[in-house]
Amino acid sequence: MAEGLMKKYYGTGCYVQSVGVKNDLEIDGFAICVCQEKDVELSRHRSRSFDELKEWGDDLSSFDLIVALSPASQRQALELTRFYHLEVEYWPILDPTGLGETRDAKLDSYRQTRDQIISRLHARWGPPKE
Image (tube, rainbow, N blue to C red; front, side, top):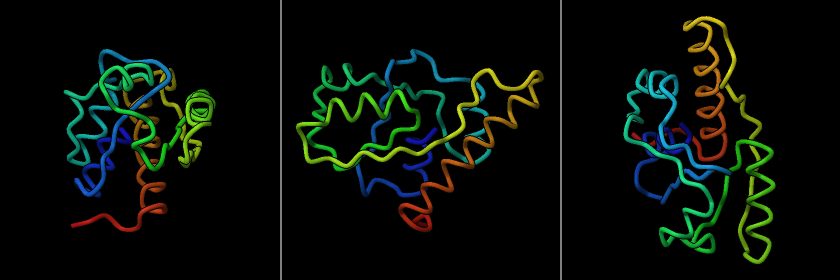
């Protein structure tokens, strides 16, 4: 969600890559749904692992900032970047997976996560570019 929202609100002025501790072959359907409500298309999105990022030719040293959304990704980012002059920020964002008993309750959890990401993006980079 974070990569799609960043690209939607701030355009192509910076290079954004979604990376996680592990890769997920398919994007979560609830994430797709709540991002579509904000006109953000995620259905073709795929997160990469840190290892895949390197395999695909993206060197961590070419990035200025890593935003970690989980303690596990923060730990791995700090470990991988200890030799680079690279900023790592941790944003404690709700992990909505497994929350809610009904479809509507699950969507509400994902909306909360989406909205937390949007708030952090705006706080960090200001109002979205029009």
